[in-house]
Image (cartoon, rainbow, N blue to C red; front, side):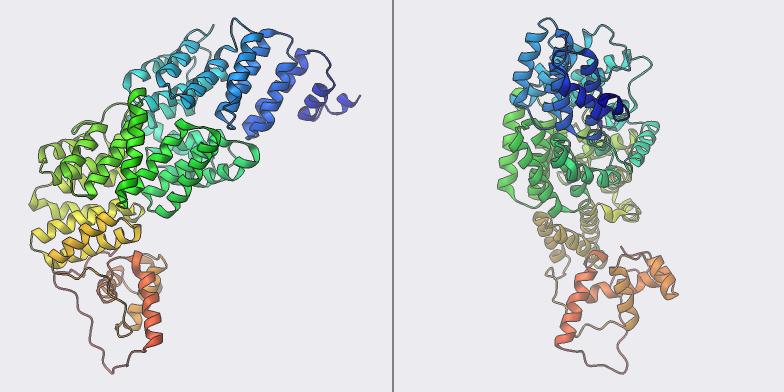
Length: 606
């Protein structure tokens, strides 16, 4: 009677029957099995594993018991940080079902364990491929265990970073009838080989990102975000990834939390939130250490090393890249070797060692090519072109820009469009550089990528100084300097400072003096710009044209000793403090502000 009254609540019914059972019962085991899967979909890994283990205890068949033990082992390994459970549960599965030992689920659990224990990428690959190819029906597109095996095989292929590893995965996907799951198909393109991701796949990914506004499972949100990483769509996943991290400790989705933290770190790097990046990688690496996820730690170690290189912490960057290289080389972990090459290339660029920088950047993908299944080539493209230009390797730089254009990277994302255009400007003939750089700096939303923006400003400023347009050069070099200072990118700050001195400008930011003379209108425009309003929005509020606003900002920036909107807020605060301490003496007719030599009042100021 009690069980009958609980029919409307399958979860309570399942546990009531499981607690009441005194001998194996497949009907109860099957019900508990289904409840476990539902809890896992919701993100409750701890509850799901407990239910699956109880379902295994109640299984009258040795084969079903072995399969359920293997599934529990797989969930423990891949979801909630119970790697140490895997050997024991897999041994129990082998005793229960010596012939199959949990079959596919057991192979996935075993592969995941060896990956994080000894980093045996090739062994994990063989385990997964062998289990998939030995299935009675490898064409069954409804087999959820097969889906999980394929997702894990994709990650093994990624970390291996070798094109030949992908061939069995593509073959397995091609066998599925009527076809692979949509998200898996998206991942194979946008994460496995993003340079060849077509417009239709990107549209489908954008739809999946929009769906994250609901309540996705931790694993589902993580997989969508992984698909978004190399095609620059992590910004749309940020809220969902933060939810994953927030619920991880409560529901036990440890691996999802680790992946979410490092994906948020990727987004923080490109969007210039570098202090946040430090916190994110610190939390993620602590979880990796606590739960023994060695393989999952490498993306976090890479991000920490990349930030160290960008900020000029040479010792840390070299120590971490040495760790990556020592671990990756004997295991054939190509992606982790690419991580190390990226860091070493950026470090060498900052230090002015341009031949070395070119060698490391082209180790990820050679100049003139975007190697298949080398997604990291999209993150090192600008480094390669810049290093080649600065190392007087003009032919290689041009060849790589042509490769970016040929593969259509500009159609993948606005950031990759910026990188492609920046490479085109850097490699253009001198008589076309001004036009090309102005086009790049006019890209809408360029401030979303502050490190790349500042590097483009620096390259343009260097060209202008060498072309003897020193007044204009100072403006762009000051913008570069200000951008690097905000980020704390010390080697690049030093470069911009050196160029500014060569252009005859002081490089120390002058203390804002009480005597700085801004008209009331200039002060109001500066305050609105500091609040984030565009020139057009300010003009609409003050009944002025956006060109008039631009002209006023050109006049304001040199007075405040800054070069961009990013520094307005601090400069205005300094101005207010200085004026409180020493109020300026009013004049009957303040001298009109003059443009600095070489500046044009036209166009918009960023």
